Length: 553
Image 1 (cartoon, rainbow, N blue to C red):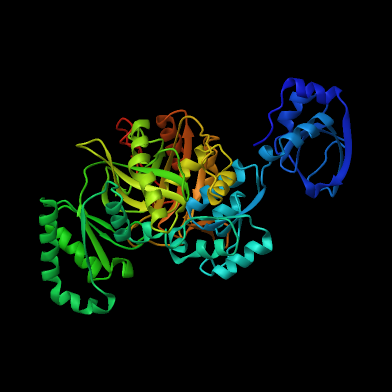
Image 2 (cartoon, one colour):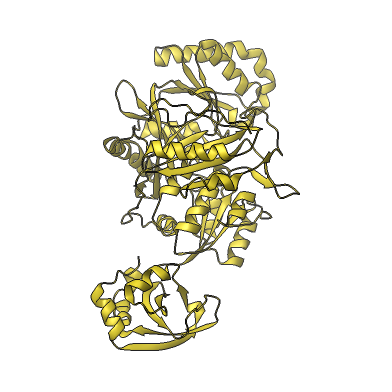
């Protein structure tokens, strides 16, 4: 934390005794907000602030216009400040850090943005591999040549560039053990070990944990076919399918709708809500026999379909303590009115009115805290962000856990990061060091909304390489509009082109959710991308019915 100076201290500085120094600039950092603080201390333009060993001091420069690139600087500083700094050295020290963000999607762009623009203790932000939008926005230096699947390469990069914090965005590197290797190399890493990442990597693991530690979730059963036996599965499919339905009837005492989901990682698409028993049978066939999700579908989880309203709940975890973030609500289905297949997420907003403060307390006490304690008891302490997909049940009004993710949600991360006002780098470092117990977070008032723009055909097949125009015009709609890039590159003419299914996350803040919605759709209107589409009703659960018109190209 930085020192807060009183008027009496400012007066003492202007009229009191001082000490003069000439020192290499590597020992201090110029404040990024010098101009606003100068007026408080003195009308003299040579008065500014300096951060000496992490402590903010008012100083008088010997030469006006000092630049951070200077090798040495002469300045005078109040003896009173030096005494105060000595007294408060332990509590006021702020560790400065260079950060490497692993990943290259919209979530990672939002993390880079918060680290670069909202974290004064962050000296540099790198993103591997990143994407064209992250690089061009100046939110990070993208390292597209770094193989993030090769732990030794990542470790070597961190050592070469003095990385003091690695933030792992996607789930796949976590499940593969990247965090394990980085931590073993002595590099602070925000993200769980591969053992703890099984909370997302295996629905079966998550369900067994919930059962053991009395965490409320949907009832379920499972069936599994070993990969080498899949060629024989078609012969016995009718028996398997009927067995599934028998299990469902016996365990749940009810028929459709039924949820069928792949056990492993399936990029958010491995869940099918079957409205009839025949659809459930087809879903089992798709996963177990047709191998639609590869090894992720080798085991299938079949569970009751909870009815109510979905919400996303995030908590930072340091192994023992959990710190809740603001609430958010995602829109998984591809079409307006929540129709069509599931996607990775077509939009989100924060806060989510469905998650009242009372319900947030219930979630922490009945779901998050038992999970954190359970993981510790199982010998795999969780360090990172727990993303709980919840269903607020219509009948009881209470939350049940649908699934866990072990990383920030996408696109929920976008709305959370534009609202976060705390120094993200310091917060994540505290989590890595097991020191979240005394951390609190500051959030901007009002609301934020993100609308995902996707390639036509998503979540099915789509065309890459389509050209996108007018992204700068979109950001000029209002100062609170930010375009996050999830899947973009530059063509030979310098135009942005789409390189994925979900391509852009147009994000805006407002005094309330209605204002955030109006701003974000005004920004979406500016984007010229005929081959893209978006949902027109993001926020419909929390706002009066108002569909946004479709603007061509």
